[in-house]
Amino acid sequence: MGTPTYPPKASLRLFPPMNLASIKTGLRISRLKLRQREAVFFYLCISPWLIGFILFYLGPILASFYFSLTEWDLLTSPQFVGMDNYIRLFTRDTLALKSFQVTLVYTLVYVPMDLIFGLSLALLLNQKLRGIGVFRTVYYLPSVLSGVAYVVMWMWMFNPQHGLINTLLSYIGIQGPRWLLDPKWALSALIMMSLWGVGRTMIIFLAGLQDIPIVLYEVAEIDGANRWNKFWKVTLPLLTPSLLFNLIFGIILTFQTFTNAFVATNGGPLDSTLFYVLYLYRKAFEHLQMGYASAMAWVLFLVVLGCTLVIFMTSGKWVFYRSIGE
Image (cartoon, rainbow, N blue to C red; front, side, top):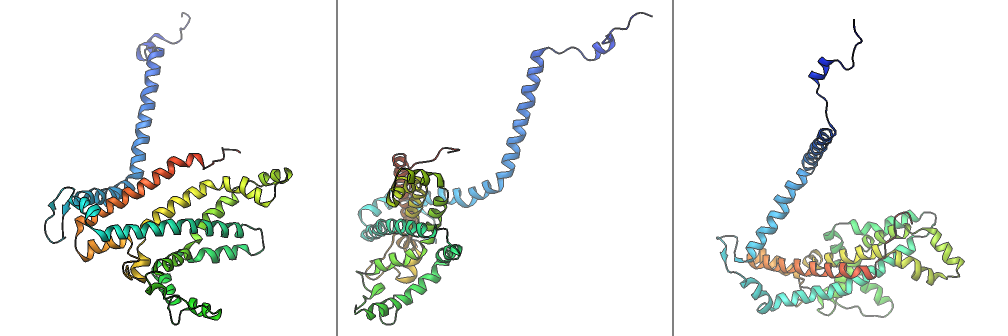
């Protein structure tokens, strides 16, 4: 018997030797198949959301743009009119411009007040005191109540004869206004009413405050900073991401104001609280001008989108983000 060779010649015939190029090719194919399987698994996981988005968001959005170019009363087939609804909105409909003016004034007044009150409450409730959690819950609770419920409650409070606010004013010798019944005071009353939900803004600021490292305040104290300097140099810059979120969210929310005006005043008196979305609702479901209402909705979308983009584009100059690990 001779000396056995390894590997045997028969095995070499069954399993031919593989060169390095073929091994690399096999690995690339395996990685490609793995990525394909991961992609298929990813799309399967998000498919419920994707189908819901297409059916209930993207589809209606595209349909509303088509209807904005038509005249449609929901009872007959839509008639294509091109840009006529948009031209009418900007040139012939004075109530639409009035409603946009009311909404813009409301936004310019309410959003800064909401930010100031929200930040003040957050600073107050950021103290390490016993039972502070109860106070945080109490201040946040109104923001989760139903819109209609708190509007009805405020309507009672704004009652000129028997309301709580005018009763308290009478104790100090002030004759309270007619609030929701007076064109000069109705919008102010709605702004006061909306501040009831300031807890939403407060809770975002509070989360931002608790994310600020204590060591930064200690370093500031070592450098001789007083309370105002610590707030201006440490707290406020590190709160700018929360401020950016609350600012954009507040603008989007105010441009969509509907419930307060619909329940409390229905746009009156003398259209002093005729918000843009309330006027859009009237055109769509009371006057059955669905095409014109769709055009109003697209104009509102573009206005909100423009405001958001401007804020985002300028945020790089006044929003500060901490780097990871800092």
